Length: 104
Image (cartoon, rainbow, N blue to C red):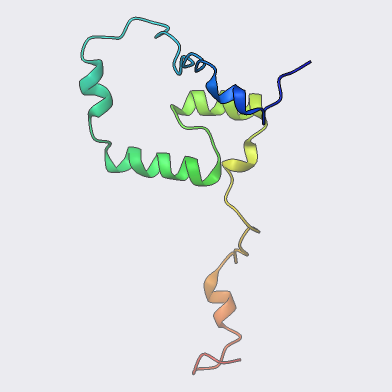
């Protein structure tokens, strides 16, 4: 039988030990690690991270992104959103139907 969470005597018990929030570091940290993680991002890196967060796409090197996208089925996150734009083979052909003032 589980203890009653509303039993007032429960509050008189010893506090539960604090859980460990982080696991031990899996690998030894490289020299200069603190400087590297505190180094400001370039404008290009920041733009790539923002795009990745906005689109839900992987962030990393091109080869890693390609492998991850295929493995996780995220191809749509790399394509432009929306319907493809209509592309006319020659813009001047479209203008021949317009009058001198630009109207049809």
